[in-house]
Amino acid sequence: MLSTTIYKICSSAEWQAACADGYFKGAAIDLQDGYIHFSTASQVKETARLHFAGQKNLVLVGVDVKNLGINLKWEASRGGDLFPHLFAALDVTAAKSVTTLEVGEDGLHIFPELEE
Image 1 (tube, rainbow, N blue to C red):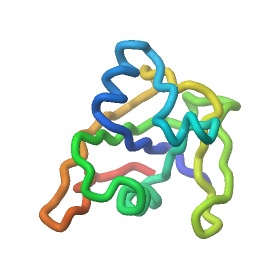
Image 2 (image 1 turned 90 degrees about the vertical axis):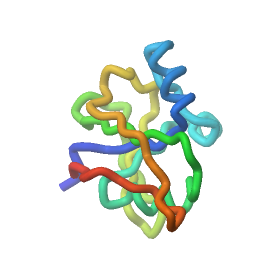
Image 3 (image 1 turned 60 degrees about the horizontal axis):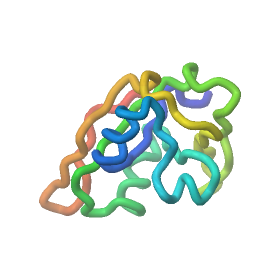
């Protein structure tokens, strides 16, 4: 069964700009690839470690997949895992949680309890 909650890591500034606009169109890598990269609860810590190590001023945005419709595709990526990709802008009202990601002394981000 695929996850019902997916997660996006982005900078606080990117999310604040999206909230002002009403839509998150993606970070630079998303715009380059043509879709917004998301991760499941079981994937997001590794995503943070690989792509955001030690970065501060990040937020973790949790989104219920049922709010995304047909523009959400599950595609094979890292290690053959299926990753959620959104081929549309994200309406910020679809976010069910937004959490600041603090960086621990070990340089890794500290995550809240995550929903699958």
